[in-house]
Image 1 (spheres, helix red, strand yellow):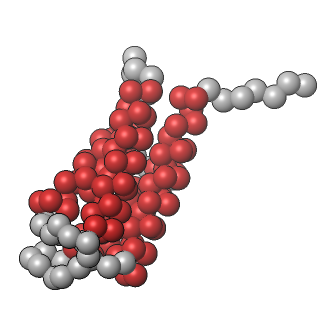
Image 2 (cartoon, one colour):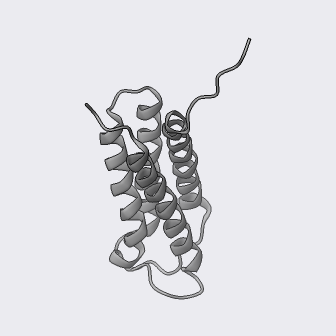
Length: 127
């Protein structure tokens, strides 16, 4: 009896869902324990809390298959792009005290956006 290995295209959605859950949890934990520097303008930890909770919610919805894959990929891509630009749009500031907060947002945003883009490009065209 041979065991069939699923194609890479069927494994990508599960990978993206798992990464969304992990990175969302990471953002929420970092927003509570991390150092964001001096308080200016918008509260940067709340941005990470909201983005992290959205990532967790999207990961759970994707696992439950309650949303179409293309819709989920689009939302994940938008969330990833927001995390990439939010430190600059919300003016976290540039200094040694804010470097870790910017790095966390950019790393999470890059990972989420890249995986969502790979998933979109890897998806089979609908007939």
